[in-house]
Image (cartoon, rainbow, N blue to C red; front, side):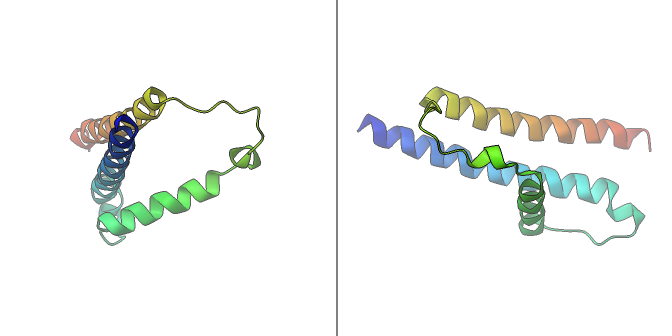
Length: 102
């Protein structure tokens, strides 16, 4: 039962990270890109652009499936997801500060 709870926690945090990331991207887009003439985007387009940029940043080592890679613990997965959420919120905060000077 404990493993099921961990899986649910990872799924919930992943979904939360996706929504926070899409919100951050679309907010920053509306603050800095829309004023220069491009159209506003919603959460779905923002998430799609996040996927495209992730795809463009991929490296061959991202697909390493060798046995010498350590499996990440539950705590490491949770920490990584919280760091993503924190990064998105910090990015919006820094964008808001920048917006104050425009």
